[in-house]
Length: 561
Image (tube, rainbow, N blue to C red; front, top):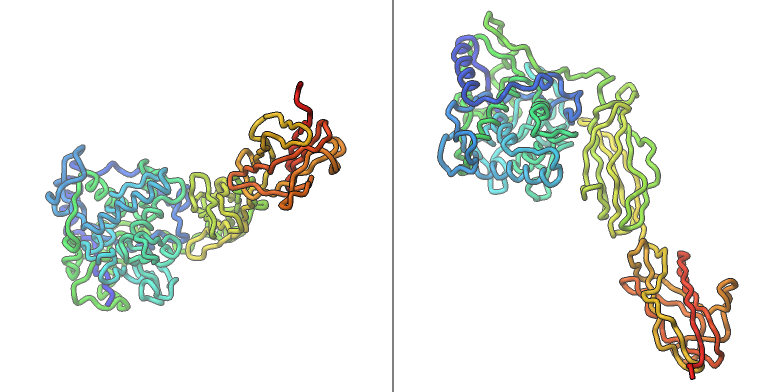
């Protein structure tokens, strides 16, 4: 039976004073600086904006609201590689911690400019699922039972109708946030990853979910070492300033120190342990309340929570926080509508060369006008070693003011043949532009000698030196290049000669035209050349099918007295 979050409600007026004092103390001792002023604004229309379309990664689902303890796991400036000691809250289950660190390493190799810190993943994992319910995962990192948020049915939460047929969340009516990082199915369909290499993209696997969260946070051109970009990334995950403050607090706490604990022994959020406690008469609206791990008597995943969401509670005279859930139906002018080819030419290149054309696409809104700040993912698809600049197979960029974005330069590998380049944009209804590309084999553009010896022979003898040439493309030898060697009468009127130097065929018969092939390095050593009894200066012309030509002079003269 799938596990479902219980009630995660903020305390109301009766505990407001106590909570305020605790937060004030936390701020004085360890809390991060206040978010950048721009970060509280609707980030979905900014560069590096929410990549999943009409909602945040979690669908703005509820989350755990516990704050870190006032005592930090270690003093600032000291090592974060602490032993298995210290504050229990600083302990992160071994498999979960390993998944966060591996995701950081993967992003460092594929999107180094993002500078994703694993502590940010740990902070989000803490508030979303209590580190996968204290690390209750198997050896592969998959939770023993699915972690599901409440149905996003518009009753106190965002209204998100089913997008996956219940495949991930078991709900064929409305979507629910799924897994330790709480992705809604439509976001997972776009950003899901295979973090543990098992060939599956499972939102309930911490390795898959952590890598997906990392790529989502790094969308666009974000640099998470900058406070403004980090705030925007967190707000794209759950669009709530309270959520940002909570994640920031845990991020700062984990940056001061943490340690590994055995799987299944992590500290669960307090609202998990007291999931049946009642809220005070003045609850905070649900955009900042959070689902948690239920007690053993939690109903099946398809049964809605027994307690109505806070938004349905009667109002009180206590202070309240305005709902932060953004509209679920953005205006057509700012909503992604379509993606089209913006004039990309023919995509062909010779092995080892850069493509002269670059893929260019245009995003439009639902009114058909160009749409700026839209995240577009370019991918090289097929059995090819062609890559974008930097050796990347996949690159995500953002459209400009005219709605267009151009992929980085493609460089052909050694594998020849056709493949495709795709551009994908959009969340719940992604659009794809697929373009055919091809790599052709190198063709020799030059024939050169490997030495400059004068080739001479006495009448009736063979030439003492063998002729060696190289067929090359931009200086690189081209293997298996057919080369035709012809004894000609004159360089100006190169017709086949019936006298002078000659080759011999297998029977020893003189021949003056031969077709040969270069070796693996583009080199070709011609057979022995013989002189007849007629002295003079002769010419040997070498040609390839691609038009590369070389003329070599042969001298037949009697030896000096």
